[in-house]
Image 1 (spheres, rainbow, N blue to C red):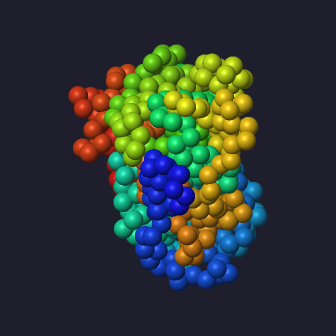
Image 2 (image 1 turned 45 degrees about the vertical axis):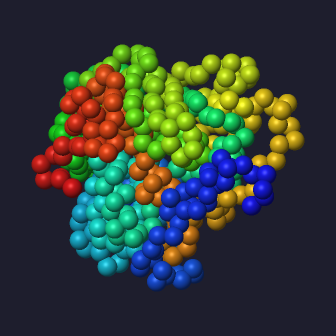
Image 3 (image 1 turned 120 degrees about the vertical axis):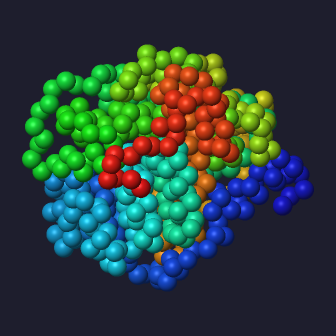
Length: 443
């Protein structure tokens, strides 16, 4: 390593490269029994919407089972793979096809991520699970622990982080070129014009549509009558099922700076401003402040979160137009502006200072073909561990966002004791740290 690379850069590059973002070097267990050309037997839980897109990305492998509680949403997938076994209940699928399945793709509402993924990993199956990793903080930690114990390949659906440009951005942040980083601003246009938030529970009780198993859709969540206000995509804003804009887009938009800064678990979270707290749904818009203690060669950092169309000041980026989604990493020497949610379009500011800037040599592994799904498939077959695996990346990034949500769920400042996994002096937060499962659905 060149002598002019100062200590800060060496420490951060070692932290990033030494473990491939926390994972390289761990035992791959039985994954190593696959050859690179051998096809995995994959089961897909959730076949419509994002599940259908994930299915396309893994269709080059053997699709042996399809599971969905809604036949109409899954119709296209069921027709496309007529030879695959069809199920509504993931538990029956695992009971009947345990020996035929190598890996599982989970693309269902947030509240069911952990029940399905944990069941799969406990059977020794590799898992790709959509973001956020889980509905509760305890689940996020349990997912990481189980993945490590079972030695399975895992990947959280943070697709933008597969791009070379996104990983290069993390290397730039880690290089020290920004100087001491003090603030991180992350924002999204969700939920406005995407799904409803800031609304009350509907009073009508229409009949359940044909082909939808409402009890299975509810799963671990408390019982309530069916309504189209929840199914399909609109569930994201409802507290029993989703994690709102914070859980949905915070995972995407904060991912690249999270890696570059090596952010750990937060120490506190509080509301700056909201459209108003609601019992059943997250606010129509909100602004949060999440504090991080000094760690990993960086000082204290404050993360400011904005959603529902709220944005940081354009002054932070020299008066440029603030995109609908993005992140701004503010250092004492420079600022990095990550434009839109992929993290792959970023610029160093002030621009005139960095016209001839050359990013540091790559220290992070690159995804095969810049494909998030192929990176996971390679890892399942014994290749390099995934970038967005449950251990470290997915579990910790999800916990950060869920601690922010604790403030929105309780209306109080959250003093987060990560060691004890509790919100100090806020017992109201406990049910969202450790979920209370519907009878018969305990995990």
